[in-house]
Image 1 (cartoon, rainbow, N blue to C red):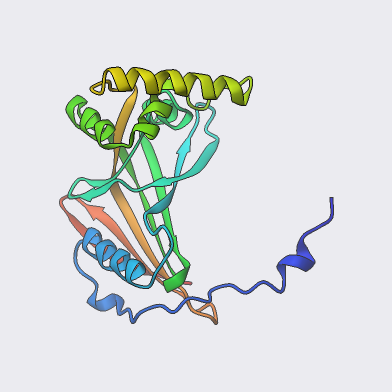
Image 2 (cartoon, helix red, strand yellow):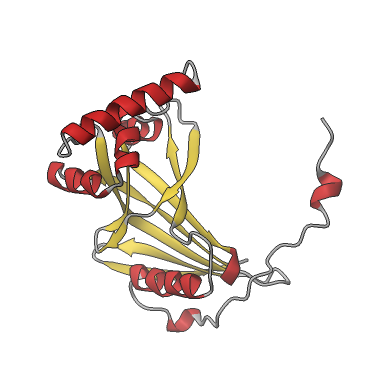
Length: 217
């Protein structure tokens, strides 16, 4: 394989324009700062600002990661959804801890969340599933996510069958569809600097309140 070093070296990085940030004036609650930073990313035109990397740990202690969409942010934490039978669902059931990573290059910012994970209620899961488009619901109903697939035709046939079932019974809900919430134990905010003098502010949970710590770049 041809090494990528020569192709990687000339690529530019940290080209975004961060808004002003004074860590000493940061709010007491990291969720408030997250909303502020998320809003800045949206206003700056960041593509898919709600995309995030979810990291979990499998039964052997090996980390796993994938990109998915943020569903909500409440006082409880950050919410996302998936099948409980998927790889991430199985991992979260066995070891309910996770990390989330957001990166918004348009504003040169990133947020890292680490914490414990809980499930939504049966009613919450059903409501979330019902809000999805019919195509997305058909895929969730007809696909054993993360399992080996024999052929694309097999997948198309299963999804088509599920779509017909939904057409006949719109109230159908996938029994494995699950909302998950990451309750944060730590949240780190990172703002880039072209000269690598990055600013890092970490919140750590202290009972019902939070402490803040500045970190070296």
